[in-house]
Image (spheres, each protein chain N blue to C red):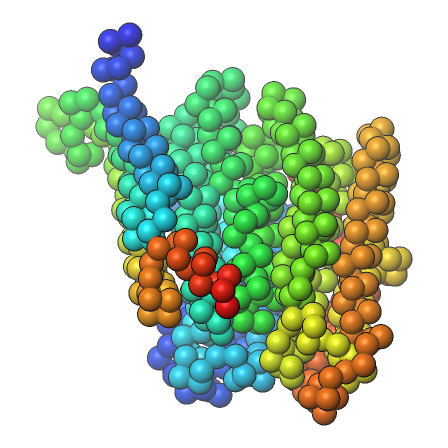
Amino acid sequence: MIELLLGYYNYWIVIFLMMTGFYIVISRGNLIKKLIGLSIFQVSVFLLYITMGKLEGGTAPILQEGVTRYSNPLPSVLILTAIVVGVATAALALALVVRIHESYGTIEEDEIDAQDRAS
Amino acid sequence: MIEPHLPALQVVLPLVAAPLAVVLRRGRLVLGFATVVAWATFGISVALLRRVLREGTISYALGGWEPPWGIEYRLDPLGALVLLLVSGVGALVLSYAPASLTREIPRDRHHLFLSAYLLCLTGLLGIVITGDLFNVFVFLEISSLSSYALISMGARRQAFVAAFRYLILGTIGATFFLLGVGLMYMMTGTLNMADMAARLPAVEGTRTLLAAFAFLSVGLSLKMALFPLHLWLPDAYTEAPSLVSAFLAATATKVSVYVLLRLTFTVYGEPFSFEFMPLDRILMPIALGGIFVASTVAIFQRNVKRLLAYSSVAQIGYIVLGISLGSETGLTAGIVHVFNHGLTKGGMFLALGCVALRLGSTDLDDLRGVGRVMPLTMLAWVLGGLGLIGVPLTAGFISKWYLIAAALEGGWWPIAALLLISSLLAVVYVWRVVETAYFQAPAESTARLGEAPLSMLLPTWILIGATLYFGLATSISAGVARTAAQWLLGGAP
């Protein structure tokens, strides 16, 4: 049991973050809070990639005297790309929230729905 | 000389053109430029399809780095067919753009709109042609991010909300996909799809593989708006500018279907997806549910654009139903419907764009008598509608024919019966529009309007004409689809 908890602690962190983010996206009506949840959700997957490349005692993959254990650099490189995608998503989403606030005067989902129904 | 590099040019050309469009700025100039680029992209797709049919699968090592280390571009008959659809619709929609764009989007934002449009085209083409799984994710996000921006350019403030909701659901879908790719990489140590397929037998049956499969298929189902994950689609298609609805309805969801096909058949392989994982038994009820629920909801819509959007959800159901039958004929039906429905729905949204140009509205009540005022536009719409129903001589009939044949072949005769019943639902929602447009007297303000300009009618009629052409001559659509289906199932050639 302890083995299961501690041996895979990195995966537990990933799962915890992922579910936290997902829950925030579903449960919150405030658009900014939704975005915060979405970012946590994305970052949890980034962490999964990064932990999978790491080897205990491994170093950066540079040929060197006396070093035999290397970490896999590819997942980190992939996540560099995914982070850029995440930043672009967040920027676009924030821009949309600004426009929503300008035209509705609110960023609460239920108030927006109420205004749409009224019109 | 340039011939061997066509696979790369297919993606690079619109990608480079997108920032140039921002630099050019000037209204007319930038539109002409974007249209030329889109037609050049279409030309490349035609050349690639011919080459694939002549020589078989094309493999292209990007930047000279050999696969599986570098990124490989890989094109098979199925991919070439989808490329043809995406670039063809992309080019036609841009040729249709001038009048519609002036009416629906402020002039000082044209260059930004076109830039986002070209990026979206890049992303969709890239998804199809790449052979690298992580690359698929990147292109998926390029096309998604630009489509959120395109949708938010709609005229009403509801467009912002629709784009935001699509962004939330689309990002969840893409992150699921990313998670699935990560788990696959963990198990196989490669991202190249062909290499991955070769290495999968060694890790057959592990829990991680199952989780990866589940995450990948749920993520893609969100992107392709498979019932009941379709909630973003109706709002997004209704609020987007006419051009964008036509382009996205014809291409975006279809490309996600393509990725699902690639994954289930070429990476995981048919035995894993259909025998080990019960994908067919999961997809079949979902597809049927989507067909019936979405078609029924479509009947009660007051806005024609929304009606078409719900009909799109139902048509995705037909495509997935074909795939879930798992046989060669079923798969052919699914693939041929990707192509036929793309043309039909694209043409119908374009015809509706002509109506929106003149009327300034797509509400059913405002469409009264429009069939007498704009006969050519509405005739195109109605012919498209006949395609949705599956009337003989239209492309939709070919799809339904293969679908029913596949259902009977597999002994699923109740499904064949349900397919016929579902066509009746399509008759009802198409008829509602026909009745309003032809059998009711036009309002006084409508009666003074004229036919849409030729620059818009021509692309609309080319697409609708194509659905009629492919309803008669099936060698390109159904022929390539059958080759693709045989190839996916691992038979010759």
